[in-house]
Length: 386
Image 1 (cartoon, rainbow, N blue to C red):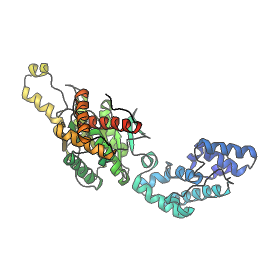
Image 2 (cartoon, rainbow, N blue to C red; image 1 turned 120 degrees about the vertical axis):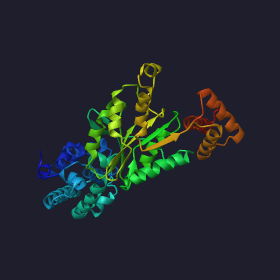
Image 3 (cartoon, rainbow, N blue to C red; image 1 turned 180 degrees about the vertical axis):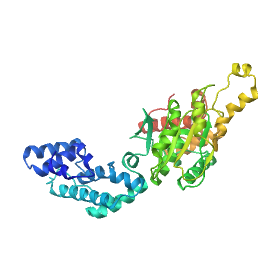
Image 4 (cartoon, rainbow, N blue to C red; image 1 turned 120 degrees about the horizontal axis):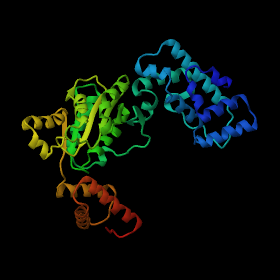
């Protein structure tokens, strides 16, 4: 280990980054070979257009005792001093590196403006207190698997304005999320309706709308519903708000997932809790009822009550109803305007109806698929054929 890395007390994990490691070596060895290794690492790291920016991001999203303390409590003065000294050391390293015209230093990240170590540390303390640390500060969406939470690097970029109609449904969801973010009483949420009506898209659009206000999403598979309590405990100390999301939910009778979800969902909860459960389903009552169960049950009313009780535990239930012809064509027209489709309206609507018949029904998803086809044909100059 070289002297520079050896001098770091808090930011020790940065040595695992190849470019950072090569930069520290270059500070001690100015040979052509070492410099060439550094240049190679710059290109491999895609840092040639923002060298300083790259190192600042390493510091910003590093998970270390300082970032954890800022997010979960208050760091001691000794910890602040140690972290400040590490930042100074890295700034000195960056200034000592001779760059060539091949590289751009890049713009400062606002948190690192003027490269004053003391000012940087003050900015970072506020950042971690608001945004958490490590992967939760860097990413907005995650999946739960194998007992851990893993980030999703590429997520849907859909926005609320991209989702046409369903105005009241979206309003109910948005208001509930705002209450959640502001520490007010909120409700766990069930979104149900036919496939393609925009349930999951609405959840992702809400995430994109409010991620800068500290909203994050953790997607949980049906098989991992028994781990919801564990997930909530994992994120309980973060200064963020988490949607625990399970998509396309349904259960057969006697499915153990029913009791797991019941235990996690208890209608409205008071402000202060930082996780909210959101589920989508194509079935209002989530639990399927077979004819044999109804016939064999000694107490049919009790069986029905059991099947209804899960969905009834969600404090907010939002219905995404089936799209009729006027609503479907309204969505088609709005999307056509967004993409500047030049087809005459009567021709557009005639083709849209034909598309819905061929594809087996009207829905926002069908409308979007149709407009995507029309737009591609318009741009490429092809006839619209399907």
